[in-house]
Amino acid sequence: MDILLKNVIVDESNELVDIAIEAGTFKKIGKNVPEDATRVIDGGGRVVIPGLVESHIHLDKALIADRLPNKSGTLQEALRVTAELKSTFTREDVRERAEQALQMIIKRGTTHIRTHAEFDPVGGFHGFEVIMELKERYKDFVDMQVVAFPQEGILKSPGTEELMYKAMDMGADVVGGIPYNDTDPKEHLDIVFEIAKKYDKDIDLHQDFKDDSEGQTIEMVAQRAIDEGYVGRVSVGHLTSLGAVPDEQLKPIIELMAKAQINVMALPMTDLHLGGRHDEYNVRRAVTPIRKLRDGGVNVIVATNNIRNPFTPYGNGDLMQVAMLAIPVGHLGGADDLHTVLPMITKNPAKTLKFEDYGIQEGNSATLVLLDSHRYQDAVIDIPDRLMVVKRGKVTVELDKSIQVDWPE
Ligand SMILES: [Zn+2]
Image 1 (tube, rainbow, N blue to C red):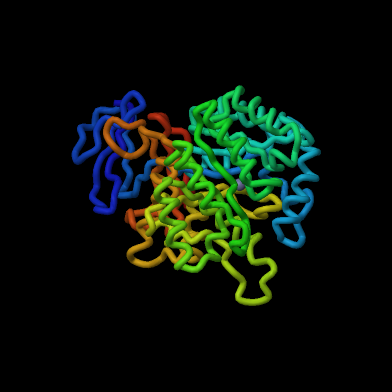
Image 2 (cartoon, protein in one colour; image 1 turned 120 degrees about the horizontal axis):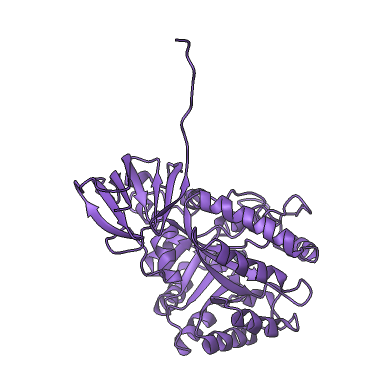
């Protein structure tokens, strides 16, 4: 065996087990595994989880908040300021910031990432190329999926459709889209589905970003997924408009989404910052209705979206913090709800991203995070230190928490 991790908790039973890792996979998980390994580690009764899955992040425009601030805090100013900054992004600049953001994320226990990499005829294509390079460079630390993302729209930004095909030819894993930021959402979806079907790739949309439900297109997307044979293959981020729909109208929408197996990425770090900016009092939460979607059978995920830019001027790459934020925002702190939160940053996104050997289970890829928590149910609310990360059987991150104090002899 390569690694034996002793005395750890892997589920809500909180029973102690040992984990044996060999040749990159979980060889044995159980009690009293014989100590026959190159490295034996005592987990000290702490919790182990199967690696955090960041399913919606923009590495290419991370860490730019200090360059040109979004003073109003609105989506409109965020889009305007970012578009202005984007024209100044060089290849080196994107690489430096994206790499810094990626390292922040990896150090905090994320082992799987889906990132939106954008391009347009004005901002150029080099940012996308840099993200594809990072995917290869960091493959021992994270499994990364890259979404070909037309942030400025496709129809209203001529030349972008050609760049979408170029991105797919270069190996993009997922077809992105942004129906709310284009001249015609339906025609936008026509193009997205055509490309996805041609390359046989899943779709991931920036769905909508509104405090109200006027002009929302999620039903169109869900029906389209069914009609095109894309059940279970479409994900949507934000979807804040659903928060403004009364239950009676919401119910059939959620039923249709469940039928189409739409995956929803709630992005509270951004949506709380940009949403409800025109509310004078009783400011709306402007986050998609996480509990109602979950209870309606929709696969719900919590993700980061941005780290320190005009859309989200804070964040440190810690998905646990994002999940913790989602707890009060989504009313997820109750006894029946809290245990559904950790899956929103682990197995729910893993299912969406279709990582099939994911999870603490014999035979699976040996990817795990040792948390400084002593009860599985507290894994999120502790926002624990990530003491160690193992990716495909190799230790990739180790936190040294020791404090050395010298006393006179
Ligand atoms: Zn996004």
